[in-house]
Length: 365
Figure 1 (cartoon, one colour):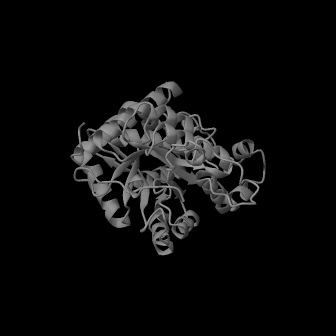
Figure 2 (spheres, helix red, strand yellow):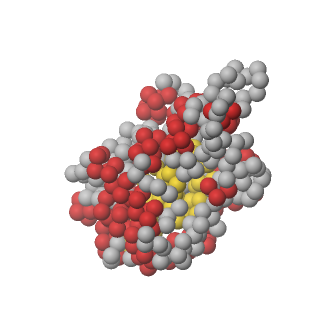
Figure 3 (tube, helix red, strand yellow):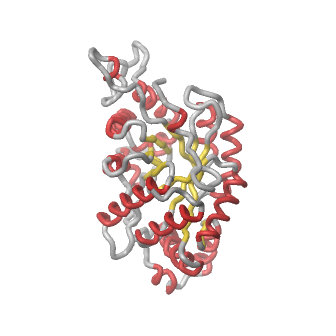
């Protein structure tokens, strides 16, 4: 195992926040807006997060969704690395079955060389899309095979990151570059450090695997809230100390949006809820405006879904969101909260993160 420092995993709470706060960005594209604008907003959010003391900023891999421009996390992270200085940057996550492990090791080794000590490699086992798109990505229709092989793929990726395949292995003479091989080559001065690996999940599989391997774990509370506490309990019960962590470290993704008044917050999250209705019914599109969402005639079944969806989003004024986040941290025992704000406009999302930082008295520069 090459060098991973504990402070690259464990964050520090700022201001009066109960735990470290971080950002998960889907780089959402609203109606009437372009992917270029969405990516520029991502830079603005990352810079705001860095300035206000958020611990890390992650982007998530999604495909074939018009309203989400984060299909290529490594490309986005390289862009952000050049435009930030301190904040940790990472994937939340890269969907490992979609890619050859060597390719991921090369991409994140390159990112580590660009921004040493600031890169996280979060991995998921879901496709991040529908079955047909996953088949196009993977060049195979055997999609379950990729998920079932996840532990083996993870082991292979870790070997590439650490450059430690045993003698006699078919890949023993293959090196992920940039990577540790450059530290051991004649005249090499490359740091042996490499990005820490996180496992992501919305059920018990990755929770248990992360625990057994002694890795940090990120749970998708923002779309699987009912499974949060059982998954975190399973992770902690399964945890085995490792060279990476001596004790469990779990963050949860949280949908949260603060606005200057309660009604405006409701308007903003309703547009995200309508977007989810369309996605769940096979009609993915750009994020609708709050005006369209307010005027939309939800069917009884759609209204039931929306009410359930909104119940898991912490939204309202800054004080209301702070209270909600405090309660969630206490109920789950999460070591870190990673906030995602799904709204039509970049301005609303930026305002939300600013208000949350203000509510906790987080740094202003």
